[in-house]
Amino acid sequence: MTISTNYYNYSSSLFSSTSQGSSNGSNNILGQYMSIKNGSYKKLLSAYYKKMDAEEAGSSSTTGATSEKSKMLATKKDADSLKEATDKLLNTGKNSIWEQVEKEVKDEKTGQMVKVKDYDYDRIAKAMNEFASSYNSVLESASKQNDLSVLKTTAYMTGITKSNKVALGKMGITVGADNKLTVDESKLKAADISSLKSYFTGSSSFAGRIQGKAFDIGKSAMNAVNSLKTYNKGGNINQSGDLGNWFDMVC
Image (cartoon, rainbow, N blue to C red; front, side, top):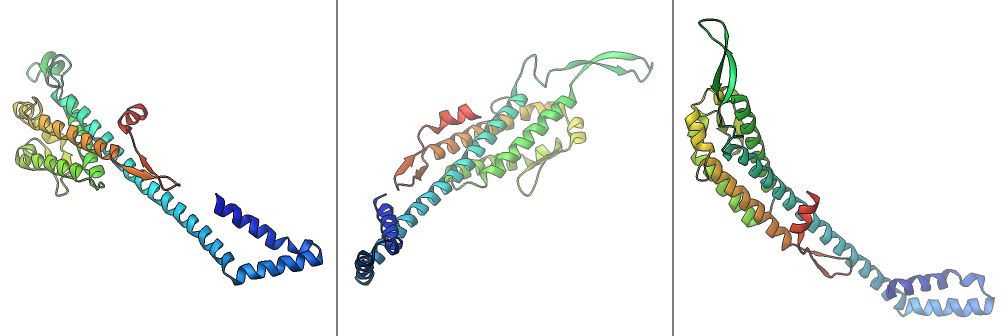
């Protein structure tokens, strides 16, 4: 930097004057005194520190933008986790949690172990807990955002859940005052299986609609990241560029 170089050269000259001959030393001291008196030394220092302040401000802007980017990427990751958790509920076919499996149970009349087909309620409860945990994580990370689209879509998702609060409660899924979900496994396992399947299978079901909102939240978060601008030390704008590809590589 020109300013900082001049500043250090000037400082070196000022503090090395005593090592020179008396004649030259007197001239140097006189010249330095005149520089201080006419204000050029002060101007040099003022320009130098102004430059330093500008660099610090640029660094602060970059730090703030980086923090926003990190929060947006966290929301994107949580939204993706919710989509995956919802997939386990929506999937049909051979490996679906809604397919009956063969179990051995004790016949109450004979006392013998017999094979019967029934739903794997432990597996259903596990999938439901994963769904609730992922849903709650999205609410937490989205609440830290400043992006209007992310906030609106998250509010829409909680609205869908609230409108099904009574029915979900009957199936052991409680919607709290903070909009988060809690699963009562005992109540879930005792719930009517037809009701569970109607709410958690099919694209137009409750689970299907939540998955759609999770997709929208993740998309909004990445749009916000890709439009985010930061500033480098030179005061120039750094456009974040195609951070979507970067996110795919690191996550």
